[in-house]
Length: 173
Image 1: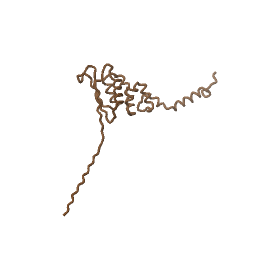
Image 2: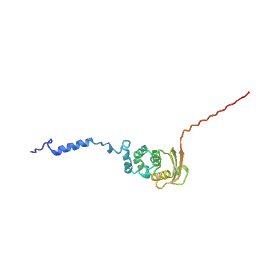
Image 3: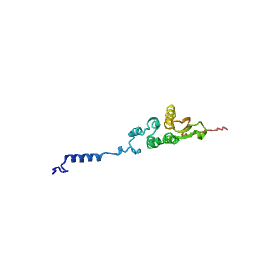
Image 4: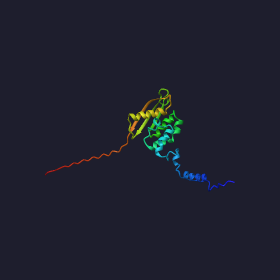
């Protein structure tokens, strides 16, 4: 006969206390595939996990929302990497309106392509150009070559003009 009852068993009491502590834990931080709800500080670690750091898109993201969109689409981008779809998709995720034309669409050299991008209200300098070219090279087909990159800078501003004209005429009789 066993004299240990569940109430008096020290290991059972310890297990119950431990289980109660586990139930109090916040497990939402472990749900890392819910990219819209995960803490912003975890995004860079998820980018490393999904292999989109650096020139594969992460450095080109300017906002937190762009980073989250890139993470959401990372598996699809890896699946279609090396295709025209991957280039168009990564540009749209980054908020760039881009048109990709392959060589047979415009009568160019075989395995060459052109990209035309509209940069809306964004700065464009040598660093931006280099990161954009590295992003394209990371997502393009290995045998294909970028023939032309056209960047249209579009800036929308509101300007107000005011004019005044004051005239007078004096008559003396």
